[in-house]
Length: 149
Image (tube, rainbow, N blue to C red):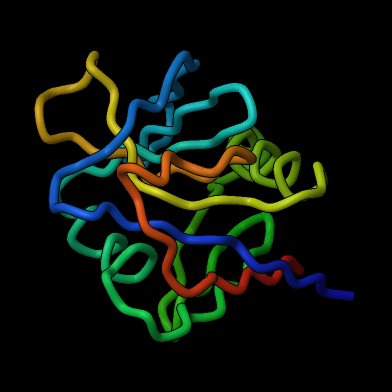
């Protein structure tokens, strides 16, 4: 039976503002070029310009309207009517496993945009974590509905 959770979302008060992602392991082995970051209590996806153009408005746009329902399974994420593959085969389960660990941990989950100094200037990270981002930098927007199959 599917479970559904709300994820609290945050957008920066000013364009380009972000806080640091922090210490992490980097996984750049995804055959589609996705770069996943694994930190303590957080999971990040490095946003190249194409990903940022597609994902930022969906997840962190300045809208106060309710975010779309995101449906996840081990092999895909469904956003509106588009499907995004998360895993290719049996050897590519780490991002989904990290996401499930966050979901099973209980408590609120928080989605925001972060950065890290080791990546080129302007690079942003879509970050899901257990800690709320700094209220000095971010304001909360309508929550995201996340359904896990």
